[in-house]
Image (cartoon, rainbow, N blue to C red):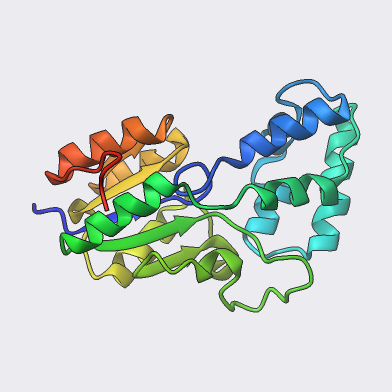
Length: 216
């Protein structure tokens, strides 16, 4: 099957990873390395982070719940301060912006599939939120709008439908293996992003495009 679309995760792929903000926050707050990730992973689907990304709680409720979850692990988190640190790191990576322009010029569809949240003070009423305003993409699918989050297969199906492609016509880039697994099972070509430049070289090989520093 010919590849017709490239689908990007945002945080950790097009944007820096929120994990970088977690690491900096932990160092500043005197918390053990990896503390925030352990709290989020342990609380899982019923926890504050995943519920925020599905727009099931307000920002105020999220902050209170995440702080309670942290106390259960023996630590204190200032959730507002943590989220402010995450938001400060949301500028797009220039190499990704250049690569997306090259891919678009080659005639492929460009999509974004992101687990995100409504900015503080905005209603969770299904309207596009801040990350959905990025003008790089033909289609942006957000967990905060859909009420579903990766790795739920239904959100991948929604994304393919809106792009007008079948899964086996898509290359999907994400920084988390757990999010790539269902995409791969559906037939997508998947690329795990650890280093952006290495990932773009792999993507370029898949597409037959030069996505190196001179791209775009």
